[in-house]
Image (cartoon, helix red, strand yellow):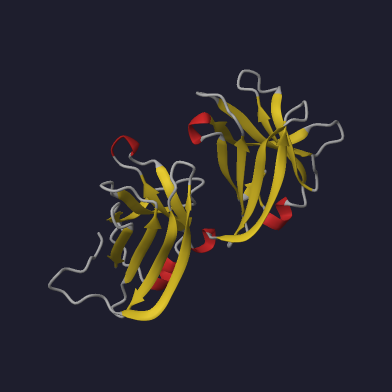
Length: 258
């Protein structure tokens, strides 16, 4: 499914066209570095990783997956493993796992993400990633404090804009207890009787070190952009695990502040 250069075959010749991304780590690794997508004259693309803080004798799995890293997605193509001694991975790609031929322009704007994953007992665990193409983060973001009922600082809500205009939303709680999943939801006051429209988000999980990762592409069936989200009079609520009607932390977002 992957076309890699053989020792007796000429090495791919770059055209000079390339695109570079910065690697972001999850809080399960200290990885950092870059990923380069390099166009070759034969129509193939070389995907080259240079990663810092890898671990000797551990060669992590590298894959292109669909969707965003927040949501996770199926494997589009498996790349050569990340060499733990040297911190490099180089793969020349001509086809996806489905057999579909893919060129540089398509891979440079691939609607997915590159995942660096664990091995053995940590197989499939996301250690570091790069959101690609339309999923790339623009750098625009808004950060809101999550406060407990007594006003004590409890965490953060981070809303970031993607290149395609939608919003990545991360909820993080500090000092979360072990083995818990805390319900998390977006509330938009809409009605004169005081009722809210409620959109459920992924729970805040202790096995994700107290985080909830979400994509906000639509609300109540209507598409919404990052800019439109920031105009809402809304709030994020993290609820008690045993009583969803009781919140443990809340953050106003958009036009509504704490």
